[in-house]
Amino acid sequence: MHRRPVIGIPTQTLQSIDRIPEDLPASWVMNQRYFLACTSVGAIPWMVPLLENDPETLRGIYDHLDGVFIAGGVDVDPASYGAERHALCGRTDLARDYVELMFARWALEDGKPVMGVCRGQQVINVAAGGTLVQDCAELFPGAIKHDYFPGAGWARDYLAHEIRIAPGSRLQAALGDTAMVNSMHHQAIDRLGEGLIASAWAPDGLVEALEGTREGQFLVGVQWHPEMLIDTDAGTRKLFEDFIEAANQFHDANSMAFA
Image (cartoon, rainbow, N blue to C red; front, side):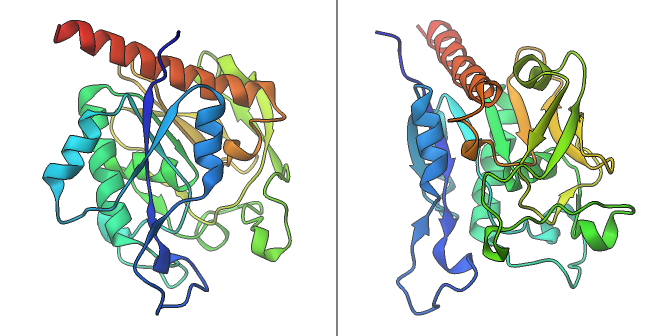
C-alpha cells in the first residue's frame, strides 16, 4: 500500500474571526475544506494547535510532519515584517502568525515541502524576509478587484480573473500557461523574500503565486483558494498531488538518512 504522508495544517484562533462572540470558550479552529482537499489526494492531515508558549512541543509536532500546508485566514500582523499598521489592515491572529512563521522558517531550513494558499502565501513570503501590501485597492497602483469575499455575496469558487503563469515553473506544469482563479483577499505580496521567485501574476501585475529556488524542494504559494477548485479542475488536483508526492519523497529521503 502506498504510504500516506502526514501534512500539518496550523489552526487559527476562533476569536480572531469576524463576528465571533468574544465570550465563547477559547478555541483553535480551521476550515474543513483544507483537510478534505489534502485527504482527497492521499494525505493524512494533522491539525496543529497554536501553542505559542511551548516551542518544544511545536518542534515535536513539526518533526513528525512530511509537509506543511498553510491555509487562508485573517491578515498577517504587519509587525512581523517590520511595518506600521495601516488603517485598512484587518483583524490579525498573533498566535497563528507565531506558529505559521515558525513552521515556514523550519521548513525553509530543512527543505520540507510547503504549500500555502492566500494568507498562506503571504506567510511564506514574510518567513523568507519579504513584505506585504496591506490593502491592494488602496496601496497597489492600478489594482483590479481582488476582494470577492463570500460575505459580500460571492461564491467561494467564483472564478474572478485570469492569471499568467511563468514558463518552466511548478505551477505551469500543473495548470498550464494561464488559469482562471477565485479571489478572496485584500492583502498581497509586496517585496519578495529571499530564495523566492514569482511564478504567476494577475492582470494588474500583482503576484499571484510564488515558488522556492532551493533545488528539489516543493515550495509553492498561491494567492487564490485552490481547495475550492480541486474537485472540478484537473490542474488544481495535480498541484495538490505534486505536493503530496513531494512530501512522500521527503519522508523517504529522510528515513533513509536516519536508517
